[in-house]
Length: 151
Image 1: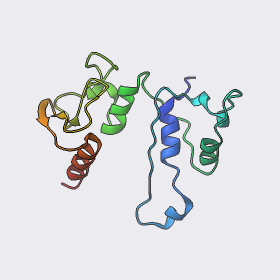
Image 2: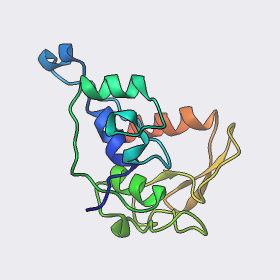
Image 3: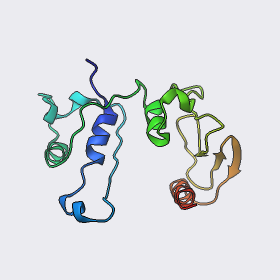
Image 4: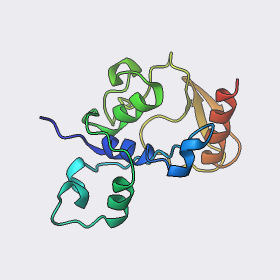
C-alpha cells in the first residue's frame, strides 16, 4: 500500500475548519501545502524522531483524510490541485526543464520553470504569452486570481 505524501497532510490541515464555522454560510478553508514532507514525518503518525505538537493538535481537532494519493513530484501534485485534473492532463509531469509547466491551452497567469527570483514588476505569463506585471508578484497573482474567480 502506498503511503500518502505531503498533499494528504496539506488536505488534512486545509479541511480542518474550526467548529464555529459549521453554522457559517460559507466555511473557512485553509490550505497549507508543504514540499517534500511525507505521511510519516509527523509524530501523530508515529514518527519516533520528530515532535510536531502543533500539527498533531490541529489533526486531532480536525477531519483527516487517509485515502488521497499524490504524484511522486511536487509540481504535478500542485497542478492537479489547482486545476482539478489528473497531473498528466495538465501537461505538468516533472519539476525541471519546463516539465513543471501547465499546457499552454490551460488558462494560467504566473510563471513556469519552478523557481522565480524577480519579486517586483516581474514579466509573467498569461497562458504562454509574456506580460509585464506591475507590483509585487504575490499581490499581482492574488489580484489576478480574485479577478478571474469573480468573472
